[in-house]
Every structure is written in C-alpha cells, then in structure tokens.
Picture 1 (tube, rainbow, N blue to C red):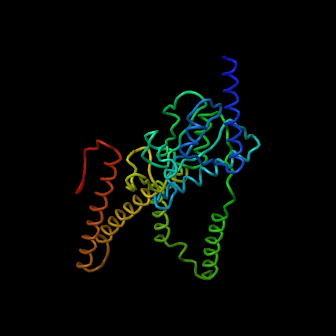
Picture 2: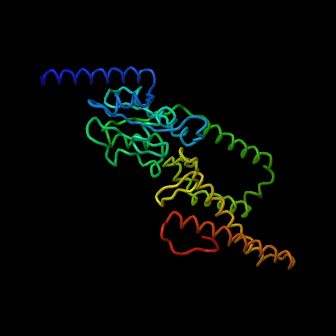
Picture 3: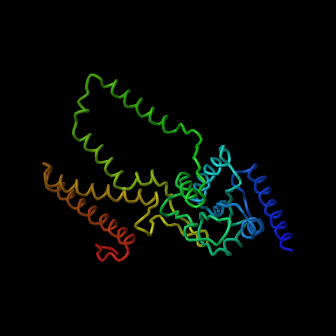
Length: 311
C-alpha cells in the first residue's frame, strides 16, 4: 500500500513538473487562474518553488505600478528561462486579480502588485513575502530575493536600451554646438550665477532621493486594487515612491526660492516697494512649503511631535 501511494505521488509530481515545463517553454511567466493555482501550487506534492506575482493588469484597474512591476518580473523570468543554468527547480508565474480573485481572497491579499515565494514543502514564512515597498521591484532586487529563498542565482540580462546614450549624446552635441556658436565670447562659462544655479539643481535632485530611486527602483505610486485609492507618499520612513521624490524636489525648490527672495530683498538696490513685495513673497513661500515638508516628515516618522501651520 505504501509503495503504491509513493508511486502515485511520484507520478503526480512528474505530471506537474512536465506541465509546468511545457507552459514555461511557451511563456517565461506562467499565467495561473484559481484552478491552476490550487492544483499546481497549493496542492501537494510539489518538488519545485514557484515565484508568483499577484497583480491587476486589466485596463479598468488603472494600476500603472502593476504594469511597471510586470515588465521587471518578465525581465527576471526571461533571464532565468533562457539561461544555461535553467532547471525545473524554480518557476515564475502570475495571478491577475480579474482571473483569480478567489486566490486573492484565499491568501487574504488586498493590494497589488505582491510577490510571494511558494516553497516545495512547508508553509509560507514571512520572508517568503517580498518587501516591495522597501526593495522596489527592479529585476536585480527580485533576483537577490529569489536567491535568498531558493539558492538559485539568476543573472539578470536586460534588452539593450539606447535611450540613455542617445540622450547623453544629444545633450553633449547641444552644449558643443552652443560653445562653438559663442566661441568668440565664452564669458558665460565664468558667470558664477550659471554655476550656482547648476549646483543648486544638482543638490535639489540629490537630496530629494533620486539616487535612492535609481538604486532601489521603487514604484511611481501605489494604488489599492480594491478601493482604487492612490498613495503618492509612502507611510514608512524606510521607503519612498518616485512621485514622493518629485513632490519633495518641488517643495525644496520652493523653500529655496523663498530664501533667495529674502536675501535679494535685503541686499538689492531696488526701490522699497519691490523689496517689500519680494520679502512678503519669500516669507510666504518659505512658511507654506516648509510646513508641507514638515507634515510629510510627520507622516513618515510616526510620533514626531512638532508641526508648523498645518498638521
């Protein structure tokens, strides 16, 4: 009896692997509905890991983050499927909310995208849920997480992207052309206002978190597929959205403009009326946008006791 049961389980597992390999040969990310999920992932036996992205890609869901995450997930799955090290140890799959809402309910999920690792044996652990808000959904970050959970090392290979080099070449060509046209008058290169403005723009970009975005690859914003609510500010101090950095950049620029106007009002040789207007405008910009910055800081660092103008 035990031998027959063992043979039955082995046959069932072999059929599962064969079917998963057949699907993976056609599409690197296997699309699962509720029935396929219960049969090939939830139900034992299984001797392979499954990395599943739970998403909401239908147009009516308007989940821009889901589309961005889907592109990165496809890059990762293709890198694994077409690598020389590919085995049937790990498969990549996706469950769309409109095709498998029962799976979302079964797992108690109310947001998308979400990445889960289903190990060959045992229950899901906390570490089997990918920390999307902290790590972002860049394929390289996902590959590190997969390596931690499955011991499978995936070298991410991206399709060539010539947009960056072309844009850089165009920018250098424009700068070179302007320098050539003004080759007899290059005094603007020694203008301290030009260099001060350039340095200020660079500083504002850096302190707003653009480098963090480049490294972590966070989503632009987050949309709850159930309520449709869009969040542009991340609620944790350990993560951020791309939209959040744009907001912070604008607020910091407005505060800086207010300070510049105050300095000009105090040192310029303009008439008194214009200096008063510059002073009032500068104080208004400084107070309003600094208050907004402080309110965002309070939202991300729960328990911060101070506020200014608004809560």
